[in-house]
Image 1 (cartoon, rainbow, N blue to C red):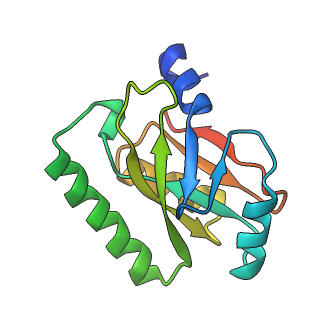
Image 2: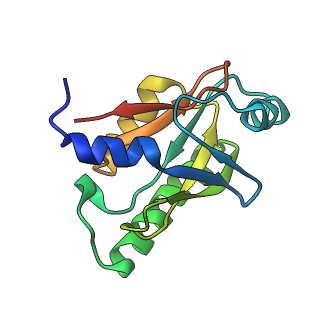
Length: 137
């Protein structure tokens, strides 16, 4: 059971997760493009992470940029394959949120990283390349 508002969860589920301007992911929909991305990077799972708007609260763009830079530095230090992403709200209520698709990040460490950046949720996919919304609260 989640402490998150149902409307917020619905917004996360409805979002489009754009990967490096090449393809979009939708929650619970298999993605042949994600499967190909994972194969190309020799991984069997991936996580989509952002550091923007902690706890689902809008913050100043400079705060988001700094948090995104910190997440990027952590990903680079770990040498995980990654691609830039944008979380897009089809309803237009939220601005695009930058993030990263990170290859080879198992579910437990992906959750940990999401919590480190005070996120409500992450998106994670296993070898089936089906993006799943993973609630952290």
